[in-house]
Amino acid sequence: MNVVRAVLIKELKDGLRDRRALLSAFLFPLLAPVFIYGLMTLVIKQNTESEDLVLPVIGQGYAPALMRQFEEAGFTLEAFDGSPETAVRDKTVELVVQVPEDYQETMANFEPTQVLVIHDGSRNDTRTIVRKVRNLISNYNNELAALRLIARGVSPRILQGVRAKSSDVASDEQRAANLLNFIPIYVLMAAFVCGLGLAIDNTAGERERRSLEPLLINPVTRTALIFGKWLAASALAGAGMIITLGLCLGAMLALPIDELGLNFTLTAGQVLMLLVAILPVPMFASSLQLLLGLFAKSFKDAQSYVGILVFIPVVPTLVMQFLPVASSLWMYFVPIFGQSLMIKEILGAETIPLLAYPAAFITTFATSLLVCWITGRLLSQERVIQS
Image 1 (cartoon, rainbow, N blue to C red):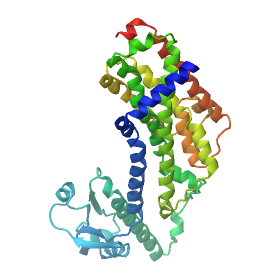
Image 2: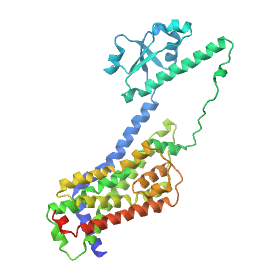
Image 3: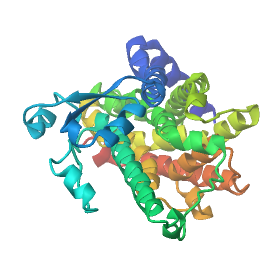
Image 4: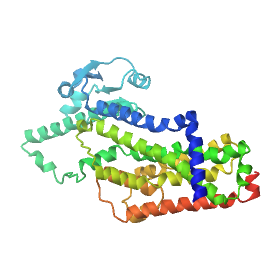
């Protein structure tokens, strides 16, 4: 332990002495919460801000009643001339509503008629207004059908057989956590970013400076050297991750989520549970970085190898997003996946099995120790040292 402590102190001093590398490593924890706050503020503003909606229409005079529906919904109608497909494709307008010339004739004959909504489905910024226009046309169609039945002495209720009624049992915290489901990505990614430079410098950097072999001449075990370097890189990674967590939580509390009808609160107990849940992540990240850095010939090569590990925290969120499955106990035994799941559940104030905490900690920590042991064993091989 004296050797491990000596290596730990030495590597931490060297890492903290390099101010430029330290600033580069901790730039991510500072910028991620700013990005989250700015992005979510824009999303909230777009969903709550009321603005004049201009609706280009071809053939306004053919459907006066439908046009009144649009005006009552807050649209400003504007006659459109030219090719609607070209205008939408060139993004000069968001969409165009085209009323057919035989609209009145088909309505008088009680025949179905089509009002064309021309839009670009690849544009994300127009989805809200397109959905609103379609819903207005659908509601107008329902009202028109009801009036036709009433005119013939038939109750519109005859068309209402079975209706689905939604009852959402999710709490405000759960819905808010689902909206901010990218928070676990940034928190866990910080553990892979902040200690990256020190982990690479302790392996590939020393090989490039030709200081690795003189270091191994000392009468200490290779495993003790690796564990000292591992703890130093883990300390920096853990500090960056905790800073990212604190700033992200502060950004979430500062966001006006209540304008979306949501409510997000955070207790001291939740913060403590979050810290316990993510504690082994920096150790896991640093152990993998040391292992891969050992096979790199230079610091530059190690950056390309180890940089791939940064995408590991993204995988659990993508899996839960595109393959939604109910949480099960075995998931907490999977490193990173279990921590990502726990962060989401803690932020949503959900009940987590008590076994989940030791399961996530022990498996992740044990995997880290195993990877460090393997790295120490590889460091004893001459072909690895001289490669």
